[in-house]
Length: 632
Image 1 (cartoon, helix red, strand yellow):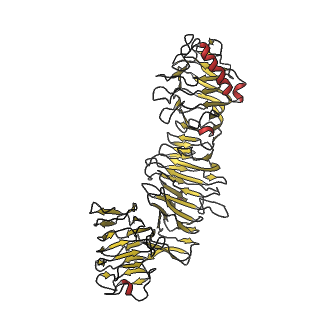
Image 2 (image 1 turned 60 degrees about the vertical axis):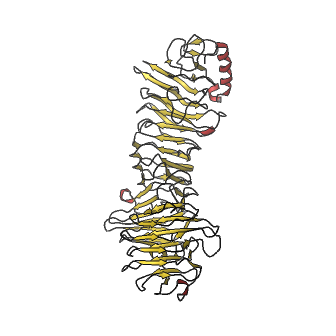
Image 3 (image 1 turned 45 degrees about the horizontal axis):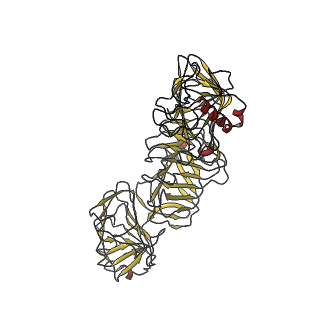
């Protein structure tokens, strides 16, 4: 679009009125790519070219006095293919830069870009502000300060124009090193916020601090050691990019990260790994760590953190929790890398990713008794449609111990938990003694897993039931039977277990017989498992032989007719098969949600045309399907 000088003057005047108070105190010159010809407020050219800047009356050269604001574009300017302004052979002094909205979101060739050539550089006045209106950029077409352009100045703020819409704007600084750029860096979050990408650890290394406000994002790429203290707030705006987004592996933050509000760090894509917080986290707020893509990437804390809010690993939506490591082996303390010196440790939430488990790994100090105290533990899923698995993995090293003390252990309607015990050490809890439920498993130091329970305030495995099956006796006829019983098929009995009556209620079933394969024959009847959290599962113990449920129907939800429920199939054996030939159905009108949470190398088989209508989640282990209708 080409506009007249008189029209440009009117736009210029209106634009000046929309600028910040600070900018009103300085002269503003508008970039005019066509020079003295018809006004063209965007497009390529030389910063120091003849008549390239419009002052509201006429065109002239850049005055370079240092306080002048450079305005790039005018609101609604047409897109131009090639939109790079080049500073050649000299330093351009600016008081700030205003990036104005384009007629539409730019593509890959028409976003704003400023480059240097033949030693050209850009020098900002003290505490300069760079402002961005709506549609100056997109997540794939950043407003760019090119790698050829060194930046200098003392104090720099990136922000959206006030009142310019609620869409985040994207900026990148591609110069690898700017030793003359000092003072504080501020990334504002107003009006949708700014996403600022640093080319590498050296891009802002000479600055005194980085402050990310709520809805802003500091994107770090290039890897290496970021040595500037960072304060963060929020989760990176509507798209939840994180207050810090780590875009490349092997990135270390050597200085403390201070929480100025509840805040989160995102590692971008599952392939980003090796993020290290070597300066710890501080502040009176809550911290969240989450990832996009698969949750295989690691984020390690190797220094004590004393923030006091809750800790959440994972996030609702299409996110993963990743692997978060408390690395005492690389730390200076053997006690409490999280909540160090905090009187009451915060709660920890594990939100299982939509495609991977969320892992909290505690790596103990070698030959040292290592301990970590946490508050209440909750586990959940990233969405209502899937189950989510959280893993707490304790590793002791050498002759040392890795001990963990926690508050209560609870789940939302989708959560599952697996605890991996250390070679030496314990997990203690304030949870009441008893069976946690088929959603929670415990793998002992011997590598064998079973459903988890609490005994004497210690979390441990070994739960396989409280009602032992008797040979040739229907389940409901066993002495001591009730609908709340947990049935065990052990080698003390022989032959198939059976039902009597149309429906038999039992909380859970475990098969522990290590001598012969066993069968639970439903005989055309229905076996209804108990309501979760303490019911609703079938378990094959790690040393058990093959276990098959055949004939009739299998459901869950407990004793109430038409109650929705969950059915857990937990094969803890790496060599034996848990096979369900019976039809898995709803509990009347109550939908059944199927969860598979066995040992990593286990195999569970479904052979029937099942009719349950709830969702299914394979959290761990493998599921073999031998019928097209196996998943309902």
